[in-house]
Image 1 (cartoon, chains in turn brown, blue):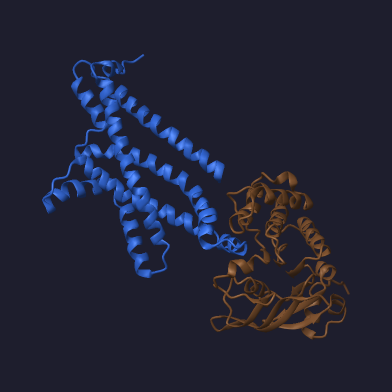
Image 2 (tube, chains in turn red, yellow):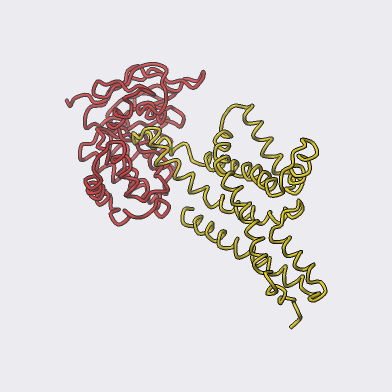
Amino acid sequence: MAEELLKIEHLTKRFEDNTVLDDISFTVRKGEVIVVVGPSGCGKSTMLRCINALEPIQGGKITINGDEIVYGSKNLSTLRQRIGMVFQSYDLFPHLNVLDNILLAPTKAQKRKKDEVTKEAMELLKRVGLADKAKSYPRQLSGGQKQRVAIVRALCMHPEMMLFDEVTAALDPEMVREVLDVMIGLAKRGMTMIIVTHEMQFARAIADRVLFLENGKIIEDADPETFFENPKTDRAKQFLNIFNFERE
Amino acid sequence: MPDLGLDVLFKGKNMIRLLGGLWVAVRISLIAVAISIPLGILLGIVMTSKNPIVKVITRVYLEFVRIMPQLVLLFIVFFGATSALGINISGELSSIIVFTVWGTAEMSDLVRGALISIPKHQYESAAALTLTPSQTYLYVIIPQTVRRLVPLSINLITRMIKTTSLILMIGVVEVLKVAQQIIEANRMSSPNAAFGVYLTVLLMYFIICWPISMLAKRLEKKWG
């Protein structure tokens, strides 16, 4: 078994009186691809945001390689460099072209040399089929292209793991594929990932493990085969049934 | 061709005088803009505060200045200050004060709008990319705010230049006042001069304002 990379112990998150995440614990091993599924509002996205310390937590502990990630702490930006995150709404910087979007954080936050990062960025852009878009501005790109750029931008920081927060939810169906293919490519290269998604087919294809979340709790934690064929809980069965269409 | 009385423009120093009047108008607007922009930026940032008292005070200021006709504000400052406070300020200084008060209000609203229009996600994705808060402002937030702001503030400059046509009412000799004087002085020799002279004034305003508003349009397109 590969070494543990991310460890979440008894994570609790509340908004006022509303408990969004309730005593969540799991570990992610190096190279593992974890897919998180569950009904809307179950806390999936919040969980990712807590892992990257974009939200304060009310209880529990999140560690990466044994270093605790604490909201608002001094060394947070160093720890965050180990985690890349891609959001549903792409969030490219609209005033910068594709290449400058990618270069900004490596050159400013990591103080790396521009030539070196440019070379790497161009290679990554080529890999996702966007080398010719390096000088384009985000507004000139389609949603799927923007999302691929956002993935490259995160990868260029050399993260040890990636978080994907419903990255295809805002895309037209024909663009979903091109983004998912990039993620499958990453999985093949051994990238550790936590993916929140509503694409069940994709989840099944890419996951090493599936977490099913409901009301802020992990109800199932299984390999994809077991989860999609023989879910243990009724709640998971019900949830999976939403995706099945039959005409009696 | 009807006689537009354009010949009066070439009598004596009339053209130079008109241009001088135009310069008075432009100078007043430029000084007011130069003061309004920094004050407006500060006030705009203050306006994004969550403090309810601050919100109410700034809102009242903004609405008051906007609702009042500029001419009334000019009268209040120019005549009001003299009679109520016993201080004697020149028409030009009064104009600069009023245009600054007005410009600051307008500018602050533009700044507030530009700031709140930057989505929360921009801050978050910058944070996820491990940029520090100051790097986030420097490289992500401020450039976007400025891009939204520059075309709008350029438009504000042209609005100010146009509104300076009111200040002749408090005795400032700007381009429109000079035009009146020229027409009056030549009433006997060129009774039809009014049309030609005012047309010239119109053209002068246009020549000043049009390039400015073209520039604003271009920037808007470029950054939009």
